[in-house]
Length: 259
Image (cartoon, rainbow, N blue to C red; front, side, top):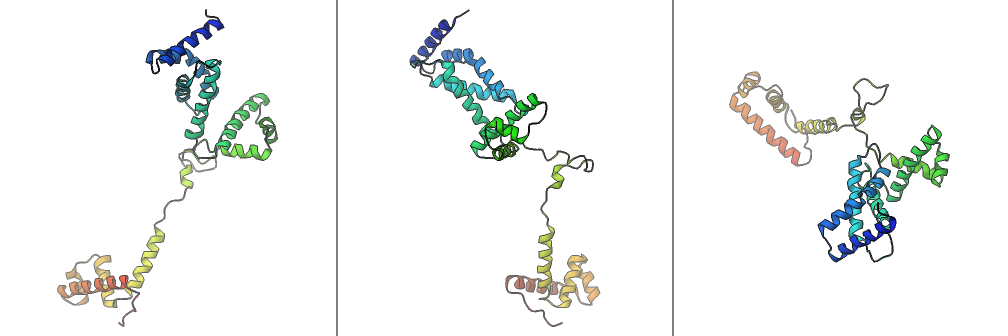
């Protein structure tokens, strides 16, 4: 079993060899394997039920590799002392930049994460949820700042729209049912008002012909029988009415013609 002095000597030797042969995959892999337990311990410290441990371990491992690549063995400092802040920095950056459902300021993100951990610790210690004053005292901040941190923590978790609305809601009702949807009726009402205005630019006879053709879906021959004209005259009436409607739509509203 290696003593601390032997470990430190072996550590300096490995890093010195890596400095002489930068990018050596075998040396780099040996150092990663050697300090991987350190990365695992730090990842477990920040493990949460909603955050897969494998993701945190990957982030911590990335921090470990960065620490190995940046470490200067000529400095009189143990590698672990240098690596811990680097690995923790990667883990905190992961939580800050990639796991929040809603973006909030970074200082508030860190306070929110700290508040979440503190609430969990106090809950286990007190066997109940801590009060805001108790939380603020533990965090070393004002009650207002503690409340703000708790509200910001809510931005970390996204709630599915398929979540049931609650015990008082009808069976099958979800949060999605409370969200407003696009209503086409406003546009349709405006279109109806526009059409009503434009229809006043043609004669009552033309309006009746258009109604029979486009609302009742009658053929031109059938319309001719109803109003007592030929199919050719019906066709001419439709073309004439459509032309006048198009002109009225492009220009200012026209006056209603005399019947």
